[in-house]
Length: 137
Length: 161
Image (tube, rainbow over all chains, first blue to last red; front, side):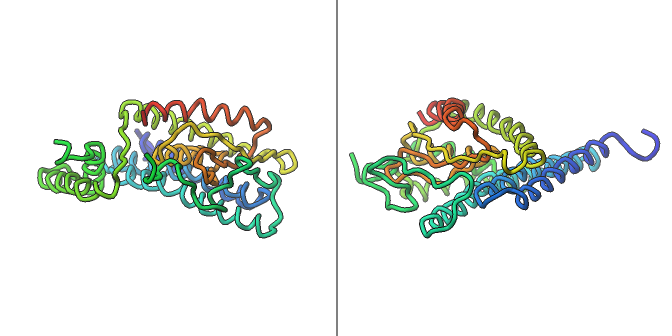
């Protein structure tokens, strides 16, 4: 292609801009959503595609422009997908404790108890017979 | 065979991750990867007694579905963040009754819910049969629960059969 801009470069730029936009939207969600639990959705979510777009862009750059395969991006996304839900879960658990300590709940209100005779695991230790309990049978 | 290679799936995954990490397909790196992939499951077998049996083909299909849902839902959440004012937002707590009965399956289910934008799994019940999920925008919580169960849980039940 003439003019110094090749098709692969356009593709790579588009992917990086897409990823960057989603990261930006996620951060904007962190600022504007009403309370902690809603804010959790913005950055942990929009970043999956945000980072994904940048990583695919990186793979495309090394493959199409430099002509070599890289696989590290795959590993980055794998580890991100395994660890991101854990971090969100920990923040949510802290929030549940704060609700019990009298913190004002967000628009979703207080979560209901799962059953009359049971509680969420954050508040109570696991009961015998729960999945993964090694004592039974 | 099963004593020498207690977790064939885990061994394959370790070799794959090793090869991806060194980013270099030569005999030496493959050999080292095989050593890691075969010895790690052997020495950790005693600490993971009730290992689940997986249906790998169904697992691959599941990964494809989840990746597609992540892309679609990312656009939905982006639209909510950009265009929906806070007073129109209807966040809700969803209490999802679980039919999965192994910790591994419940963990994957909760992780999937957290990864697909718009929902975060917050907690599991102490009796292990309910999942607490926060939804960013769920005007009809019952329909959202039914959708999540139909789309992910039924497939996970096949994988962790």
